[in-house]
Amino acid sequence: MNFNNFSQKTNEYKELKEKPHWQGPPTTKTPVKNQTPKSQTQNIDSIIDDDLNRGRVAIFIDGLNLFHTALQLGIEIDYLKLLCYLTKSSRLLRAFFYTGTDTHNEKQQGFLLWMRRNGYRVVTKDIVAVPENGKKPNLNVEIAVDMITLAPYYDTAVLVSGDGDLAYAVNSVCSLGARVEVIGMQTMTSTQLIDVADSFVDFDTIKQVIQKDSHLGYSYRSTSNSHM
Image (cartoon, rainbow, N blue to C red; front, top):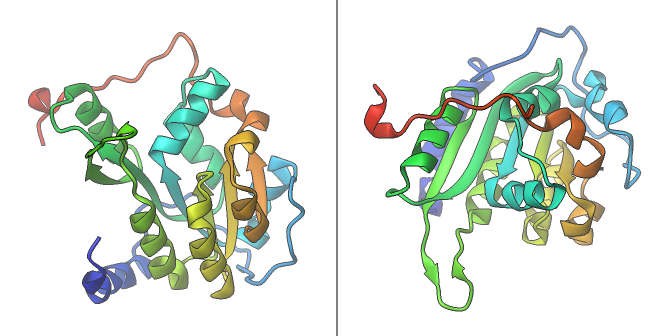
């Protein structure tokens, strides 16, 4: 990520204030920033349904972290259900999905195309080989930059990640007056990240709501069969 592109990205984000990428049903409730401190573990419905506290929402999903979470839970994520559940009736500014990509993997490219066409802004980075750990994409810088740069335009950030490296960015966003909800698996989420967020939701408590129905499947197509 080139930090010299901040001003260019900021101009792009200014348009979002008037033209959000997607939004749920309009709400007449007034967004309120600087809410009362979180309790570390709260009921998901009390957090997500409270539109008075949430205002306009931006969602930031660490794709690799979510993939490992789904493996641990033994479920397959339904990304439409996930998007609707995290948004509820709040106004959605943008929903970002960050992931490493293998340009030779046609199945993955088809999945990412489907994501782009179903409400997500996909941010990718080419997978590079790491000698000690194999291939490991890291998009923490991209997530942090987008969270901070967009902060003037949303009231609540929903961060789907458990990576403690994002704690500083979360703290910075909170200091700018926005509220941050962290969604992750308790056993895989940094306590430092939980502590700086306004609220934390354990994926284990909502897995029944966001998992894909066993009899349904996405219709992913490889990019070679798609009409762009």
